[in-house]
Structure formats: C-alpha cells, structure tokens
Length: 624
Image 1 (cartoon, rainbow, N blue to C red):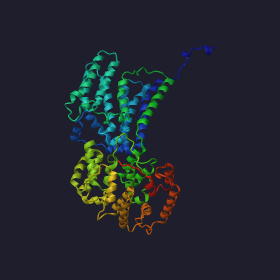
Image 2 (cartoon, rainbow, N blue to C red):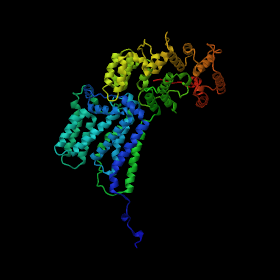
Image 3 (cartoon, helix red, strand yellow):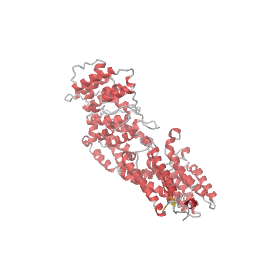
Image 4 (cartoon, one colour):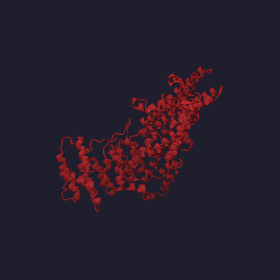
C-alpha cells in the first residue's frame, strides 16, 4: 500500500458536476428568475403596473402608427405601446414581460455562444432591463419616452436579433444584413440599431476571419453616417438627438447619472461580451469553480435590482391610493394612508382628506393619520398637478382645471388613457356631451378600455344618467356651474384650500360647506375658520358637531376670545381633553416648542389625533 504522503496533489480527484446537470442550468436559471420577477411584480407592484398602463396609449389606427413613425425608433415605440396595454391585467402583463426577458436570455446565449455552465451570465441583460423598467419612480409622470416600461426591452431584443441574424448569414449576405440594420433598423429602432452595428463590429474584430477589418470599418462608418443621412427625413428631431433616439428621455446631467447607470451597463454588455470567450466544450466541471462563479453572479443578479428598484413607501402609497380612489374604494385608500410609517407627502394627505370627505368622516378622522409634507423622493422637480392633481380637481368639482391640465400634459407628454378618461368625464359634467363623445370614440378603439367607453357613451347619449352615476353623483354637490378657469399656478393644494375656504355662494350644499371648513382648518386662519364654522353649523343644524370642529372652536375661542364659546354645546369629553391639553402644554412649555423633537413626540403620543397637535406642531409644510 502506497504512502499518501508521497501522492502528487495534482493527481488527487477533483469534485465535478455531470454534463447533463449543467446542460439543464439555462432552463432552470431562466425559469427561476422569471418566476421570482413575476411574483415580485404582482405582490409589490400590482397597482404600479396598472398605473403605467393608464399612462400609455395604443390604438390600432393608421394615424396612431404614423405619429409614432414621425421620429426614429417609431416602430419600437409602437410595439412597446402595444405590449404596455396588457398591464391592464397586471398578472397577464407581467407574464408577457418576463417571457420577453427569457427571450433576451436565450438570444444572449446564442449570440455570444455562452456555454451552459455560464448561463447565469446570460441573465445579466434581463436583470439590467428590469432595473431600467423599475427605477423610474416619479419619472413615469414626466418622461416623454412612449411606453417607457417596454421600450428598452423591445429595442434590446432587436439589437440581439440583428447580431444573431448577422451570425447565421453567410458570405455577402452579411453585408446585406448590415445595410438592412442601418437603412431599416435605424428608422424603426433608433439607437438600438446603432448598438447592433457596434456589436457586429466587436464580434468581427474578435474573430480571426477574413475581412473582419472591413466589416468593423463599415459598421462604425454606418453608425456615424446613418443618423446624419436621416436627419433631413425626420424634421421633428434635433440633430443632437439623432444619435440618442430610442434612449430614455432623461437629461444628460449629473443629476440623472444614477438613472443612466443600468442603461450604460446594458449598452456595454454586447460590446464587452463580444470579446469574451465562454463557449468552451461542455465537460465535467469543477464543483468549486462552478459554485464560486455561480455565487458571484447570483450576488450581482440580486444586488442590481436592490440598488435600482424604486422602493419609496410614499410613492407606492400614492399609486395604491390612486388605484383605490379611481374605483371609489375610499376605505381601502384610507387603509393605505393608515399604514404609513413615515412622514407622508402632501398628495397622500390630500387623498386622505378627499376620501374622508366623500365618506362623511372628515370632521371625526381628519387628524387620525400622519400629517406633514415629505418632499417626493426624486431628482425631478415634482409637481403635485402631474402626479395626482387631475384626480383631485375632478373629485372636487373643478372640471375646467382638470380638463385644462389633461390637455396641456397631453401636448407635452403625449396622449394617455388617463387623460382621455378624465376629459370624457369632465366634458359630461360640464354639459358638453358631444365633446365627450369625441374622446369616447378614441377609447373605444383600445383593446381593454372599450367597456369603460361604452358605459360613458350611454351617459353622453342620456345626460340625465349623470345624477344617477355613483361617481358623478358624489361630485355634483361640490360642482358649481359658474366654474371658472382662473389662475392656479399649478399649485393644486393652495388653490383648492383658498377656493373652498373663501367661496361663499347663495345655494351651497352641505358637502361644499364641509369642504370649506376642512380647508379652513388646514389654513389655520382664525377669521376664515369662524366664517366657515358658522356656515357649516347652519347647513348641518340637525347633526352633531364633529369632534375636530369642536376642538378647533375651543382652541380659537380661548386663543383670541373674539367669539364667545362658553355657551356652545361642546361634548364633555372634548372639553375635558382640551383642559388636559392646556395643563400638559403649560407643564412642558419650552421656547420654540414645535421644533423640539422630544416634546413633539410627547404631545404626539397623547394628542396626535387632535386638531390641537396639528395646529401647534405641523409647521413649515410646503405644497408643490
């Protein structure tokens, strides 16, 4: 028997993996990735997917197709808009989305001849595309790229398909493929055709084949010349943008560097992989090397979405509240606001107030939620008008403002389903059924909004149904037929607060009076409060005065004593709690009490659900 000490280490057996198992890795990795992404999208981003679909539009008309083709990359935009509409059913839309991500993985393995043992590396472009889709956040309201969620995915599939077509072509056919990519691919897919030509040039240089220098030179020359030659054709595109058509409409600035990062990595991938050889023969593979490479690649695949996936809780809350409020599910919207653990944005607060007003609970629950004014988490200058103002104007009965901003944003960012629906409803309430029918005819051509359009077509044909419609009937008490289009300076909250708090009409409704009192509380202006308080009391004679209105009357009556509140029928519990509040305030009196975090927390724990806490501690809130 030989001594183990004399054995050569190189002759020792190495743990290996069987070839059959390795060959199944691309399928297992791809399906696992697709399943995880599909679950994540439907569990965490269900409402977001529906929202991006509402902020897009696809029509099966020649006019719509021709409008897309007015700029380079038009076909890519048209296809992206087509796929975007399937997010109307988020589970179906996300299934199509992950299927296309799997197509990207398959094309990557074919184009770059990646062996099965390196299959995880073929998932990186799909991961980067996912990052590009999910990093947008508030950009979905302002980005001018049509069907942003899908555009880079469709474009990159064209890039890989073009490179693969070049690979399978033989002889002079390859030159015809290159000409086709430049001449046809560029007007249809923009920058992704140029990326395909650069990828072909990189592949040609990598291989030791005859004529590789000529191929590379022709590709680079085509990349430079094609946009110049097409510049005279596309009159609506600036020359500086001819080399960037099809790319997202972010700014080329330091501010948006983070947003560009996954795009840059995606564009570099085919250029780098063309010089990497991962196609060695399949055979037994060292377990250690296989698992080390797999662990590093998996870590990268997990890390990229964690870094770039936009996960701001306030943004998600806004999207979810919009989703429920569009369906008049006011309580579900309030549940979303109730679950917030951080300072809310003004849109969350405004949505909460609107939901409470519609439910008739504003006077009892207005201050039972977190309040404040967290700045939206975005590099953009966010305007509340763009992210939620249209819905607020509509439900508060300001039809002209809702219509006006839908039209202006349609001119700026392109037509959306969301805009068209509001323009239908505002036209109907404003007494313009023929105008509403124009937008209804457009929506009837869509794949999934035809039923919605037909419902409102019946109302347009029979205007008497407006008062019977559940949604519109809840708006009519706030709608004034003298609705004027004055200046709001795009500051939705400031305009609505001043409109309801300072509008005195002869034939107001109880809901209109309550909206005025609600706004007066937010403004914290004492004379304005009393004007609205007495107006509310007159129109609600038979009702008990809600708790928050009693709290405000007690506080203001004791602060200025311009109104005698001693004989007002306050609830005993409210009076006792107010006395306790005053004693607590005297006990903890410090300079600039509203800015002392420790004292503020003490008051919140004890009186956080009262108007008194709101009055003294919710300060320096800025609308936008």
